[in-house]
Image (cartoon, rainbow, N blue to C red):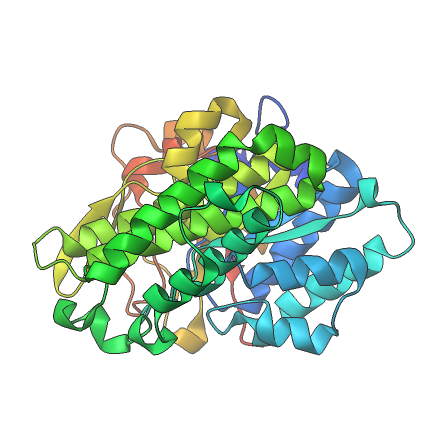
Length: 400
């Protein structure tokens, strides 16, 4: 068995990852089984650099706030802001403090320096403006979309004035109350103002589309793309707030589903710009349904990867990452009857593995599922090995 498994492995680099695929995908999704480990992000950085230099990839999209990410993209393409500023204000979930994320942004800026725009690498966050405990106010997205349109189309076409928009939005703390995540009664998502804002957001997004020939002629493609991002984000955030105020048993399932739909829409927009690598948790990128426990209830939903895969087909590729140990998190040597345990017997530290060949080598009886003592780590589901295009295995994740 060990010999069979060894025959499915390769050294970890971009060429090995691409060698698993029938053709260069438009979106190459590299998953991670846990967040916050710089060793895994260093590996991501290394693969991205090689894809830029060897395969012509030009964008990296990470699981971070899509609106905040605009500051990072401005920095790497034009030098706007300092590295310290964009790491603090351009990456969400607290991940701007990561040394590996900082190195990614530094390298991207250095790579672009002196190059024409056609050769620039680009950065995108593809998560919504969402956190575990709160969702952002739709103010930024709605007001930016309204401003873009009001500067370029007849005022009579707009569904409301900027003053009306401001009045309906009210103070941002009405929208961002952390208690609303566990208490629907604290959410403003089904207030009369929120309902009116959903209609306005829909009308603004429709107007953007209706006026696209004029707008694309009158503005840059980047400005148009940003307006489309504002439209997606405004409608998605208002839908998310609507479901935060829901009291039905479907509430949490709808919330995670809305989030991944927002992710999927952002990824499709990234794909329209050209070949990109996407990095996020495996659960957001896999093709099968994602599952988790939230609020003591089991949830199932279709991930962003599953949604994007149905649209892009073979132009979407998913490579999962799994690991042996994260000892500083209490994740010790994996049991020998698990996928991770079998891979842990191999001599090298890192491998790229052909997932379908591995599934065939393991035969009709899949290994046992691995359990984790740490909630933050999600082992591979052995029943779904063949649903991914490949696996990256990291034997030991050190603390940095």
